[in-house]
Every structure is written in C-alpha cells, then in structure tokens.
Length: 353
Image (tube, rainbow, N blue to C red; front, side, top):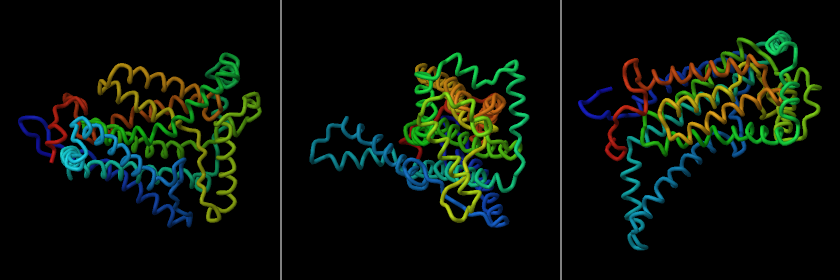
C-alpha cells in the first residue's frame, strides 16, 4: 500500500487481501477435511436460495438502488436517461470499486460456506457433548434458577415470545443485507471492508469455538422447559434444524441438508455485537447506533429465552465479536495511534480508479 500526502487511495488488495487469504485458508481446511473424512461439501441454501445466488443478487439490487436515484436527480428526460445512467455508473462503479465489491463478496462467501460445512461435520468429528456442565454453569450463574424459566417468568410467554421470535428471525435478513449495505452504500470503503472482514472472522472464530466445546443447547437437552412457549417462527426453525440433524447423521450423502446445531458460542450475539461495535466506533448516525445496541440486547435475550444458548454461550459470543472487530481492523491496515477504519481521509469514491 502506498500512503500519499493527501487522502488514501484504496484497492481490493488493501481492503480484502488479508481477509481473503484467511478465508481461503479456512476454505482449504474445509476441503481437506471433506476429502479426508469422505463427508460431502454443500452450499447451504437460505431463504432466497443458495448463497452463491442470493448474495450477488442482493448486491446487484443494492447497486441498482444506488444508481437509480442519482440518475433521477439529474433530470435527464427520456432521451438522456441512458446517457445519464452510463455517467453515474462510470462515476460510482468503475473497475477498482467493482474489484473491491467482488473481493468482499468472495471473502464473505468462502468463510461462510466453510463455516457451514465444518459445522455440519461437527457431530462426526467431535462426538462428545459438553451440555451437562454448561447446564450446571447456567444454574450456578443464576443462583439455581434455569435462565429460560427466569425469562419466561419475567417477560411472560405471550407478546414477548412473538417479539423475540421476530428479533431472532430478523437476523437471517440482517446478515446478507448488512453485507450489501457495507459493500455498496458506504462511501467510506475502509469502513465497509472493516465490517465485511469482521463478519468473515466471526464465522471462522465461531467454528473454532464449536469444536472446542461441542454442545446442542438447552432446547435440545431440556426441551420440557420450553414447552410453555407458543408456536412461533423460532419453534418451527428449531424443529427443522433437529430434523436436518437426523437426516445428516443418518446419511450425509443422502440429503442436501447440513447439520446446523451448535451452542457455544452464540454467533447470533457475536455478529450483532460486531455490527454494533463497528457502528459505534465508526460514529454512524446516533439513531443507527442506538438501534444496533437495542438489537444486541434483544438478540441476547432471545437466544436464552428460546433455549438456543446457555449464558456462557452469550458471553463467548461477545468475546468472539470483539475479537473479530479487532482482527478485522488490523486486516484493513489499522494500527494503534492511527484513525479507525472509516474515520481516515479517503479519496472520493469516483476518484478511486
């Protein structure tokens, strides 16, 4: 990287070189594990299809939403519409910025797919579960009361269940759309790269915690404690994941599903905490920061309320998120004594060619 006397000129190597290298190494580990164990490699599908389809579509959609208002603000008229569109695209989406977006997508995609596959291999490679002592730790931390029972008593099992279910399920939309926002709608390219690399590091560090302390979570070990909860989107998801576990354990080659159950650490908490910390340190608008911290609190409550995680899983989630933010800052070139990513002076987007 060359630092000029003025603002910095950024490139994909500067922003995602380290992250892509780490994610590729993680992906190589996944490929090696699959080859040595004979387990299948899957691209996990989500609500909008496989990740290699939905992620580029989300980014392309956001790029279109970035271009369209800028074209309309120029009031080109029907005859000048195509010319104005070309001008905006050249200004906003020149080759160097497209390379940054592509590198960011590749970094996230490789880390995420590797994470999902290694998580699916977990019950074959780590057969001993640590739920027993995690249950003991829960009771010790709450003075003998089960945390789920305590929250059900304090918050009730009616409106609270519906609200926390919405919060928990919203995470499934939040991750890909926040990825697109960071890559497309941020004129601070280093800030966006900071967040995207941090997301990728969450998947990698989270996988290590899964293997360090394999566990299922309270809902699958003491399901009777959650029998008083109403039917929600979360309960349907919990059943679906359990059914996937049975299918994968019965014959991983006979199903396209992946195993998706692991309690320690909570990556819901770690990723939402990551987003809140980046928003805070990058000094995003106050309303965004407050909304993110509220999201963190509600997500942490939801994971325990529905029995996804033990209390130590939540604490570990905060630690994973903090570590991911720090490592990502280093990956995009931050050093102590320098401005944090997104605060340093950068060339305008249109000038970074």
